[in-house]
Image (cartoon, rainbow, N blue to C red; front, side):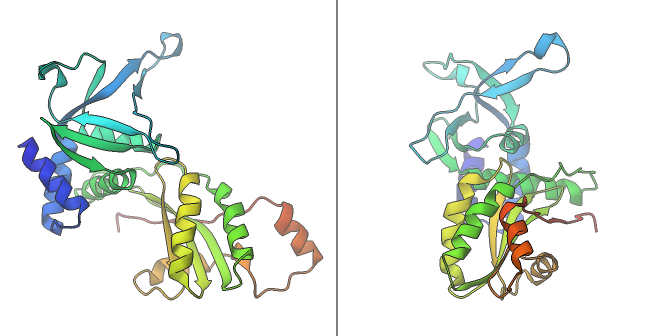
Length: 263
């Protein structure tokens, strides 16, 4: 069963799994027992619940660390794995991506599947969307602070005359959180690739990145919701000296667009 699940997850990462197959695969993974290197730590002063700490394999410079995850008890291997491991489910594993950024290598008796950090965020979103659809109440976490993305975004826009206006916003729901950049610019695809590389390392854990071009049709409602707020960069405006001082020294205000998934 687990080997078949592993192969379906691999097909999902390659975009070769149907929507119905994805739904079944995600919920099966959520309920599947998994083991991974880590240890439980007692609560401070012995009060309250303890925490769980992952033992991650460091990545190359500029790359995320990796967590090895077994779909079977590693103590049954020959030779057995003797390092401390945590026994959880796939769903519990997905909760860790809200606090740490890492990739995962799933292992089932030597057959492996790589799940990138973005894959893990997508799986978590699909899991929560399914729970919402099933009537469970899923409360959204507080929106994250993504203001540190403002300075590099402004620097990029200032160096690119083709960017007329740019917005930075947080798209927040019970299932997922995205830092969204809305661009009014020519050569939008080039800017999208550059900004993704520039801003992605600065994202808080649990937050993904999306860059929307002002003429995108598939995200018209979202685009309009962001554009109701003041742009972070506006090359078409001619601010007075007071506006320039505020823009230079004031902390950027990043609007939060809240999505209600229960409608």
